Length: 167
Image (cartoon, rainbow, N blue to C red; front, side, top):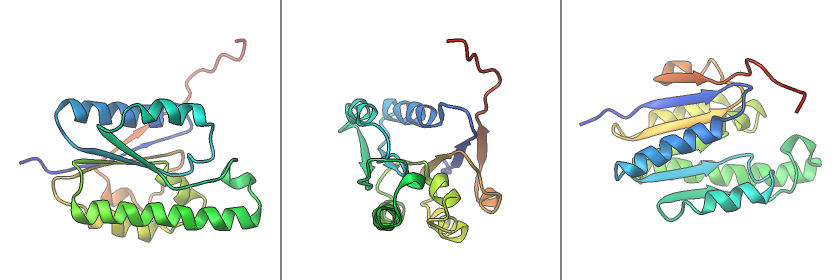
């Protein structure tokens, strides 16, 4: 019996979501159940979500946001509405964790909602502490909160080493 792990993929570099999805595909190849809950992704172009949706039904992917722009660029009223949508996503994540509904739960950009002060670190820690012993969790986002570090098994930091601006 494997002990489930909690992994973080963070940093300023690109590829955090792609790395998490790659790990999700690897889990699918091992006949594991994978659920992805994306935060702050309802604010990006729909083209990428169309491609991601092709992974269903094998990989169940959920987004709760409805906005058409980046969270920080929304009006206060739009941000308030999105906070409610994000909370719905967080409540769904709690349900998935408490029921052990999957083998791998990917919380894509959950660190972003922590960084945006939509949730507090204590809320995320409480979610992680209720995890089933065999469930794996992968969290992504640019900024990693040191308050969460004691509850995490591994941290992968993705950074730009060289950026070619001539292309």
